[in-house]
Length: 281
Image 1 (cartoon, rainbow, N blue to C red):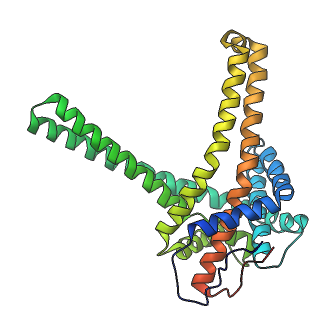
Image 2 (image 1 turned 180 degrees about the vertical axis):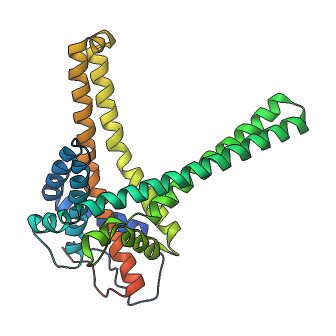
Image 3 (image 1 turned 120 degrees about the horizontal axis):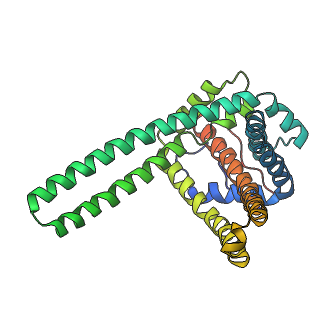
């Protein structure tokens, strides 16, 4: 099957959300065993504090490296990709911490601003209208608007830093701070297209997450609340919950890593004239 042509030889066009997501899914599905195997190792390392988190970051980035190699028709072996990314495992962890702290700061600042704004508006409207019911309705509308604005803000942050680990996995002389700047620069001017990509990809993964939630609820109902409260069964139930959560991540994470590779490929094609086409399969 042929993949969409991302060659920037023609005029610049907005990101095709459908092409990016479908190409990511095809990459994942055609290398399911390989990517899932790496994801299994990555999520087992998550259970080990600090060092394990660095290993997780490096292993997840190796999936993006492998996916990008497929896109440019320069495939690598799993061992080679893992070896290359493992050499920068602490840089991956540091980049993740930087992005996480930056995102947390932005989220907290926006939350405070939105909270204060909604509170002031609710007070002013309540005093002006003199009708508690109407004021509550108007206040509720402002809360919904604030929640929507908050959600859009989170998507904006996700889009801006979507490909941070990909240049770190691929490019020479790359550090954590440089990778963050690289993602910021590459995404400039295409933020809302990337927001669309992130939104669609998230919606695609929701059924998988819901399925695991249903399974967990069924298990809890089957065991019963009294059984779950029992110490021995409580431990077994906790292990099952953890195992299902890890399995859910193992299934979803490779898709996201393939998506990052496709987005990075497309952004580089547009910004730097990478001059390559997606490989026909």
